[in-house]
Length: 420
Image 1 (tube, rainbow, N blue to C red):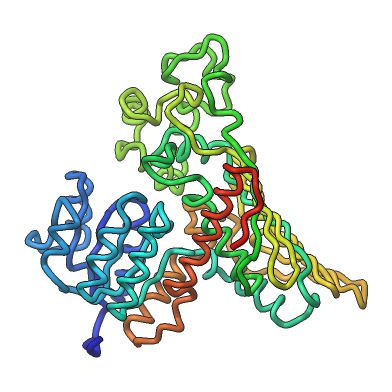
Image 2: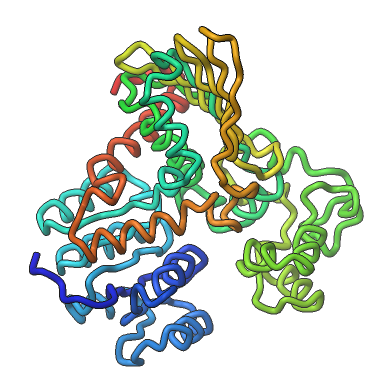
């Protein structure tokens, strides 16, 4: 690749939804980058984003293909289209010489993900798949602690992803990721974060994988007597923990909640605007009315070449909080809550608490504990300095962690143990 000129990194953005805008806004903060091209199919969203970033109308498109047809007009591209639409733009922008920020998952299928890896390899460009959990201060502190040998060799890990009852209802029952055929399996869409993170913490990929899980609760069979297909018409809505009316009107007084999840539902942040959106959009639909098929709980068990084991639990039936992790070593163990690490040293029989300074909110509303911002900062620095080591995963690393997810899904569906 030719040496880039001095000055702000230039970016094009394919997909100006919630995730694409998070990365774009972080990039332009403090003048570190400029957005010089944009593609977004929704006219209102497209026009607002183009105005916010001052993009030349000649470089604003309904479809990413129009943007890609310009050739390389920037240093890098942010690809944040829907899951099923990742492969084509990622390959096209890589072939044109763009460095890439690619929202996870890479693609729903192994074949399409492999195409992205090959396109990146051939073009010699950098790829940062958005494994944002690797970039938090909490993760760095835990990884440094393990690598230092302070708790000895890792024998096993227990890791919990508490999705949250309302987050499951918002994104995976009513939202864009409710149906595998339209997006991807729950484990790939939501938990490729965690599988990648566990591989990062362990320092190796697993050798064998097993998995169990299902869609247990959000089914028509569990619909209460008297429930309607829309929460606004429902006689039992006031007693339902998944009430769309309660969830979204409850966001109005919270600036963070207005940003997410409410802005996904409507940009009219009034009670009238919310109720109108619930009447006409999937976000007002009863969670028991069907149309969703992704699992609402899943367990993955992994065995590593070192002999260590990991158990990972993803469940909807929690508060939406930071991940919880226990790491069991031969000289001590660590219990982490996403903010603090409680380290028990076996030799001295003492406990030390490490506060990593990570915020208490680990959800997307708070940028995944600082991971969103740190990933984008690292990517911009990598492009500006041409130092690939600043990106904590390369294309091969991301592909390997995705392969583990697909292996776990095969194991779950076939009731087998899959050897990688």
